[in-house]
Length: 280
Image 1 (cartoon, rainbow, N blue to C red):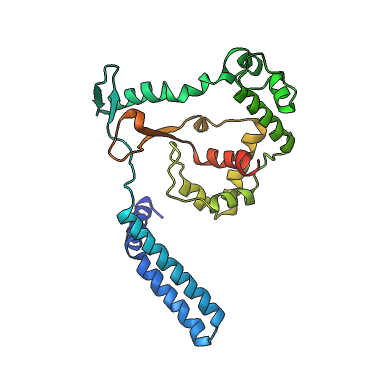
Image 2 (cartoon, rainbow, N blue to C red):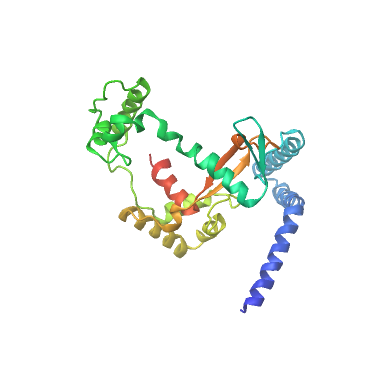
């Protein structure tokens, strides 16, 4: 098959997808009515009631979806401009790509993403004992519940250390498997939604969702992730993310009122959920 033939077929598929996005509900109703006629002819009351329940449920869902669309609050969108409040109270608006990037970097990345450094646990003797990666003997003592906090440690930090020790007593060392099997990988992606945004590299959710339909591709992806876990390897694309600014309040583009999210690689997020989400 030539490249031109593939592009023509893809164009046909895209047009069909657009058509069924607009008219899919009517085809769904026809399908359910056809399925309903079969148990009625066979006088199968159980199957008939099940199909009727599906019809009622989808009808109610469609009603509430339309109602929420009309009556619900407008949702925010990605920003095309940002407003920055100056020290004298005046507001400066950035509209070009360069000025927006500079405003976001200096006011969001330069401030908001470093707030954790202001926590008591990141200062003084605690920072020296625990280190940046918490891979010191003091960190192991915190897990064991034997660490003695320095004088002047605030109550919140002490409570945090107590909870960490409790969690370690529940989740023992090396109790989480870093092996991602093909079946485990399939279960993760069968529940994913294709429209979820991710992956600056372009390897999007649709790639992995379609990949689990093939045992070979699913096993390949699971094996690649397992090797990274076992050997402590971080792929170059895993260290990059795309920062997106969204409106918390529709129409308001003051930079302190924007929501900042980072889109990471799809397989990196899935791996984290397997290791630190469901497993723990």
